[in-house]
Image (cartoon, rainbow, N blue to C red; front, top):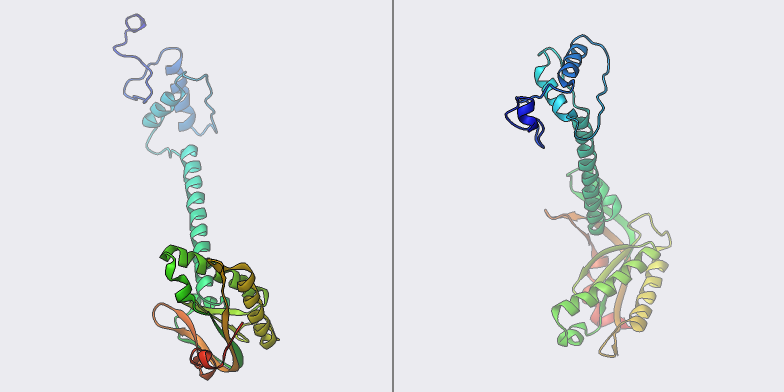
Length: 264
């Protein structure tokens, strides 16, 4: 009935504003005229307030369409949304950068990783003396023959993660793992000045940990460990940026293990 009473052909208020159909009753027309004048004659900031459903949004939409072209329209709400979106994007970028940094540090020593971020030049550092330890689990292939691939990887991950904690404790540098072998060096970072003793202490700690904490079907595992001190070259080779060590000190260790290393 109210449509006929006010001479309207359709409801004046919708969920989605329809600016071409503006109901000027209830002083809305006068309010719109006042706002147009204020915005066009630089009368300062005008605040529109009203009850829910009173048509504020519709009024603002119509105002924006009827303002002169020389008047710039700035939506504070949109600016806030843009700022929030920018902050969210910045946060995601920071999180991704942190993940990339962590992955890089898991792959390379911190000093090498920092140099790689600022240069593409070949990295090769010579050390007159460093201690390298090469260790593997005695008979691991045979011990793990009855395990599934997932069980093997899970156990190695648990063992090597424990070794990583010990390496950090003694302030040494993990080089890499090859199968069930673990390679560590001392004297190639700024960690421990008494790196020779630290490498020896790490070897004993690894043996004790493996003996007391891990077993396969009730069989305790043993370590075969070789340590050598001498000159090395440490650097990054290949496109995949994998760190490695060269020289007589690390190169002869794996071959010498079966002949010289003792089981512990």
